[in-house]
Image (cartoon, rainbow, N blue to C red):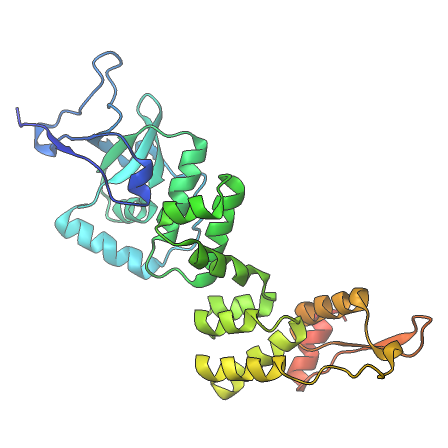
Length: 306
């Protein structure tokens, strides 16, 4: 019988959550490393498990899988086999639930592989969620908004503090904070980050602007004029240094906090600068929504269900 090998630790991140020693059971033996009492694969072992016995992780935050990339991985698996095992937990006899490795599992199914190597781990629901989120964060092609949303889920659903989250994902607290602050930006700007219209550096400069309408203005300037991060920082600094209203300016025409909040919310909703023009102290006035073209007008009218 082939000698069993032991591996300990998988590095920081997922490995920090997986504390079981790993017992590797070579496929050539065709015998699983089993618990002598139950006769089922032992926790901490690697076994070849039938694909049909593995259910997906219900806590998986990732829903979008590139089909072309999956097919490429499937082709590679057909030639070389699945080199990196997936990770599962056992939920009943001959039934498993995926912890991490959904892309590998999907590709194996595409390649018509009937069984795959898998780490068998012990994990509760919270650990399942945490490991799925960490695996998602460690993807190379993840955009900044996806990272930020995963960080937020880990804090809210796993009851982690920012320092604890930083330890889990090998990031310092300031990095975690910078990602989380992206979620305070208007939806239009978040979409721009997600779609690669602006970089993380642009986004960090926009966060310092403050008012939503000014953030949207700078965002549009970045896109229209192709501003670099450095040029964006200069533009933001110029906006911040604009002269404040004079003390003797007509206070009645200045928006109080409540109206400013409404103005900011409307600007975020319509992805353009919105003005509340107050005519008198009785609350009368008008809402001004500018548009740049007929297409822009059509977009705004659609948002108004016109």
